[in-house]
Image: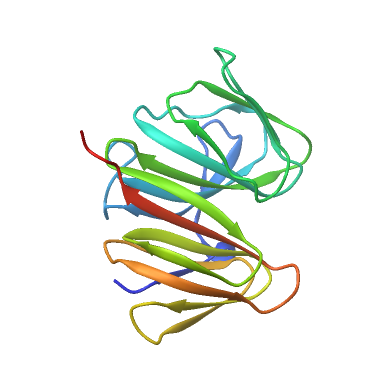
Length: 198
């Protein structure tokens, strides 16, 4: 599978049932999987009102503020109380936690990475300079700020990424050489790996 390109601006928007925002799904794996049986899911959410987050048993989540003033995340048991107000600083938490999000101002957008804990784990790095990314069988690149070049390890293909553009891949081991083309550029690199089995 080659890199599956996407543009944040043209991802279809799905309103939340509670009216508190919209989700733009980037990808869900495997194809055709629903919210109960995905292995991983990547999406961008626009949070427009305070309210509860959906719970996902057996899922690990990483949320990263993309823009806006942010949101305070607090769990009902007090174990989580985190102010998500610094852009491009990933915050992991268990999907089964009963989280309430309190807006800190106007609408905020965030990247959500979800992985089925028994199968996969995920790591996110925010790059601001040229870097190499180790190979992974599943992953995503997103130019959060500025323009980037992404060179695939498996061939001579070079992808140009404008702000808000990215690409994801699945079931193909890919490593990358990533190069910013301007100052103050930032790129989100997501790598997913199989969970060690006992």
